[in-house]
Amino acid sequence: MIYFCYGVVSSVLKSLCIEIYTAVLRGVLPSHNKNIPINQCFLKAPVRNTWILLLLGCGVAYGGEPLDVRAIVDVRIVNTDSEQSFVNGGFGRTRFDTDHDGLRLGAVYGTARYRVSDTVTLNGDVAGYADGNSSALDVTQLFAQWRPFPVGPIRFSSKIGMFYPEFSMENRGPAWTPVYSVTPAAINSWYGEELRTLGTELTARWLGASAGYQGDVALVLGAYGWNDPLGLTLTSHGWNLHDRQTGLTGHLITPGNRWEHIHEFREIDGRPGFYAGVQWRHGDHLEVRAYRYDNRGDPAAFKDVYGWLTRFDTIGARLEVDENWTVIGQWLQGDTFLGPRDSWGIAWDMKSWFLLLSRQVNTWRFSLRHDDFNLNQYKGAGFVHFYDDDGGAWTVAASKDVGTQWQFMAEWLSINSRFLPRASYTKTQLAEQQLQLSLRYKWHY
Image (cartoon, rainbow, N blue to C red; front, side, top):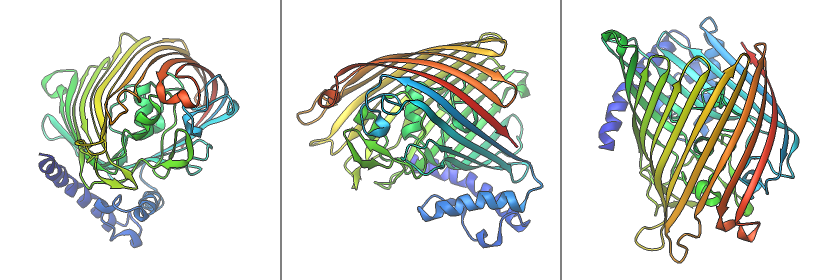
């Protein structure tokens, strides 16, 4: 079935490649890049730089077409009682800890969208956190999108490259940033930390307006590779809450061993993964998304690290009750496996959900969110339930836009959790609190 899906997606991508090649003939792309097949852009690491140069080259060579560039600089004052953060090799759930609070650089984000033609766009995001775990600015998304004009009531679209599947209901800002708080929910924190599509996605959307309905329904299918370690950091430190996105060349630190680095985006077993889902939008006030995700990993495969078999179902909904009130909920449940399943292999059930309530009052927005998360290690040679994780969190946030370029945001985060592997370093049961005052400058070209 997965190879049939690959065939369907590939046939659509051929049309995308033809359209981009047409742009080449028009002189859009630099001549020295004309022989690079688009479908090889993410096969080998050296080609990544070529893809980035390709994006920049289009902007220079075809400057007459619309180019949209945005940047965000986020400076914060942080106060936290969290133990050593996972960013620094500890088991703290938050991005900052008692040794790394005070006045901090929250992030630098950049996002660009370039319209090659009426139906093809190139999109790229970068992020920087100044924590030493990635380049100064690392690529978090880089993809081409094809949206041909609809034929009848159906509109097709496709993507190729590195991008987030549309699982998150709260990360809707530029560069995949959350719009209701500084810190996204545990589910979306995990997506930013470990999950990315390096492959293709095909969407077929029924346009309800063709039948007098104010809404639409879409079927989505994605196929990808280079995400075989998915589940490694989640099971190593449990569910975290943070706004840090792992970039293409970035890494995370193994808890308890700061010299051991985890590189997420690698291919281990040579098997493609897939996701499939449905999206429903009713007017401008209700959106529902449901997906099945399966990386089809071989948990016994080994290349420096073992592959992981990670599968989950996820449902998200956003309801705009009126012009002031918003309600959002997301739910995820699945499992993840490491190692040979007929011998010492280890397996977890994973589950998380959150509910968010937000209200706009003039230029202020106030948000309240509750998270619940759990990992249940039900298999492992002599280690059953040793890596269980159980906890919850409350988030209170307030934000205010000052003109079009400045935004102030305050957030209080409280996490209470139990994670047994912390026992050798700190307490098994841990309560963490964090206060962040964020000032963001937004630039738009």
